[in-house]
Image (cartoon, rainbow, N blue to C red; front, side, top):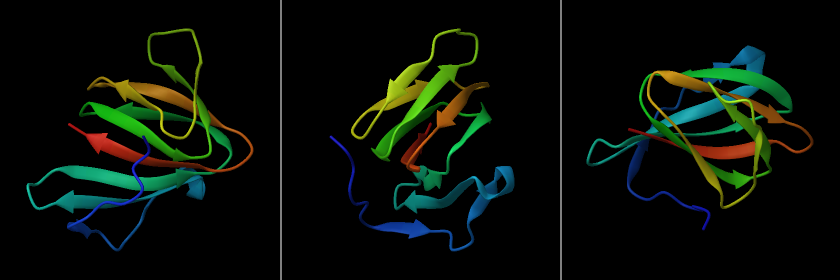
Length: 106
């Protein structure tokens, strides 16, 4: 199932802009302090580092992902997600339409 709406959250109005604008997100926080980001990645191949564990949920578009320390690429589309351990990273390839995501931290 793809998340289509997040209720009762605070949103940072200033965007997080990475990789010369190829990845743009907004940080959101729920009343219980849970933090997420909601964003879009434009067609590109990018490398991300993680401090906290992350679950990347695809809400639109698609991507290929290779987790740090692995050689295999995995394909993800709407309704699918992948987990990235803390203090690790991943390479993501988006081609065609933009990849819309929710990043669940922690």
